Image 1: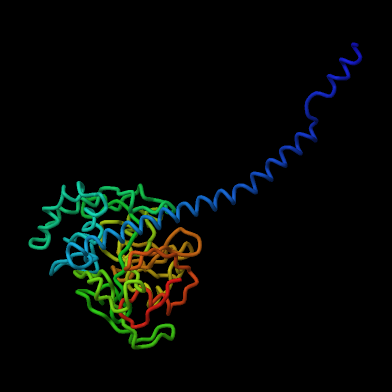
Image 2: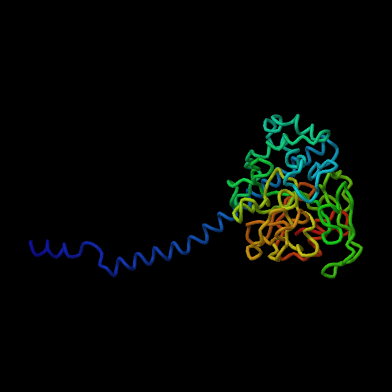
Length: 341
């Protein structure tokens, strides 16, 4: 019996080779599971981002039902610079104006008197509202939301969504080309585009379009694009700042023309935003030292950006879209309705 007992003891436990095989199998399984988990996370983040855009588009529609038109991209009184924000008494932007329709009525009410007062006396006290982080305005795929953008003594919170101001860069200067609802014409025929194409926007400086006046139709025109937060480049990069109504911060403009032609483009100097730092290899190209003129749609999603159309629907636009189609989607009056799919 003692011999049998000792023989039984020898069979207990794993040999070194068996242990290594088990470890190798576990490593292979983990290697197979990680990409699947990552894909699930990416899909969940995109779904949340699309839901954010849906809520924003519905809020814009509710604002339009009340006011008869969409909110302006930003309110800028006479004498306030259109190309620089630092030291300027700029007014509230489109996101601030729709807060009551985003279940943020309490936040809006805290500053409503100052928001209203801006139109008569350029009151800057409203800017305190920009310090509040709003979860709905953050895409879960992006990073750096915890790093604010400080301007005029206020730490402005970050966000990932931008109204579509249309506009043509170059001779028309992008950002100012659609002020008050103006519609510039593509006189330079960039990338072989027709010279007759108009580049009107949906929400511009001191202008918000009536939904029933969008020439190309609400189902063929982008109202809200995604953009990326610039804080991980440097805290002084204003891109992705929800209450700052300037290109790259909460506005896409001139982004289908000249050197900023496609979503997530990696061109050098693509965005023209005050204080931007160039990271073109990472899809955050910028003209260092340039004022506000141009800002592209960007995201951390794989392969494209999410966008809300003027009819409230949400689509995913791939980076492979042609410049012609991107123009048609963002210009409200080019006369060429284009299917975003």
